[in-house]
Image (cartoon, rainbow, N blue to C red; front, top):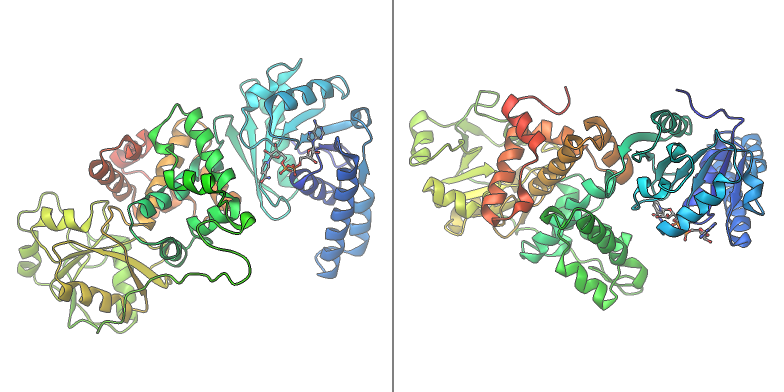
Length: 525
Ligand code: NAI
């Protein structure tokens, strides 16, 4: 298949935020673009705004003046639907309402030629349903751009039940020719991004609900350890709680109340209060004049511990690449790490059932990468009160913060030694209350689990899921590539332990993740 010919006219219906972005991209890619909106003034404003954006690109030397002029000249207002009769592709970006969209496409069928492709930018309505009453439903496809369109690379190309594969391929290739990163998806609730991203908000909200820490502290952990551009609370404030809550509710309802998608009463109360985030001046944070950004909480400085030792040699079987990276950071920062004798190592493992060795010991504390059990549970299972667990980081070599949790049984001396150790290695240390799975690990495990289910159910490929989350919501790593890096085995263990800790079906392991765990295969070869 090939992309739409540059000579092909693109019609954009709806000239709001999304439609004008789509028109900007299509005209810059060489197409004549006809803009239509029931409000003629919206078309005029869109064309004027796009011309200004092109001029700014010229000023920044990212577009030539001649190209900007030509692209601007390719933008044409359509006075009525009849004016888009010669379109090769129509992209609809009107109100998010099934009946209104159906009526529009029915009208369009009476206007455009048989070979014209009809695309909808819907973010939440079934593409199958939008196409259902058309004469030729096989030519309708989802072309889901992300806001702001010129900056966000992802386009989800969504096939409904009737969509012709060749039509989806043409739209895919066309999006690529426009400089976008397209991904194929099957029409299912939330498509890829709005489904797979749910745990990013939901796990944050659950951590807050369980008083793991305050919002600013959890946000800092997700940014400075997890490598996410924004923490969940600042991101929800930006999106708007009304919008975010309604997307969560619609995905929850569409999946017949699957507990994976259960909305949060914390967010419900924000919506009830009208605390919608930035746009209303208040959400999790306050905005506007005089508003201060609350500081993340970090532990007070503790002395460097007397000794650090590991019981499993880095790189040896039983060690993990993740914990090796932490030890490597200690060594880089000049912290002497010694190998424990076999008998010392063994003493903590007494009474252990299928227990992995601690990542390291520090002044008597056994320190583990979280496996989804709370530190308290782990201390009880191992009969070793001085137990501390630490969270996942995107890159332990570069992370500036680390979250840890101590068992309720842990002595202050042992805990403080662990704090001092991470501080000596240059981390700001955040103490979370002893929640199972900590913050980054449980979020990443749930993102990977949801992505695995989407792949399992044929919504998208593993590469498609990862590309979608990186290009649609700027995740620092695709969730499945991340699961591969952490180890599918550990991700499955974390989820199983979360399921045991909470007794909720929410944390059930995706059948595909289980299968990878059993075969030892990675998501990406
Ligand atoms: P918007 O409200 O900024 O623009 C919608 C435009 O459509 C308005 O100018 C309105 O006058 C026009 N319109 C309404 N009914 C029409 C009709 N029957 N015929 C022609 N024009 C009509 O909305 P926005 O944000 O641009 O969203 C548009 C669509 O894109 C929605 O379906 C939305 O779900 C989808 N979308 C929105 C995203 C976002 O972040 N805002 C992201 C991805 C998709």
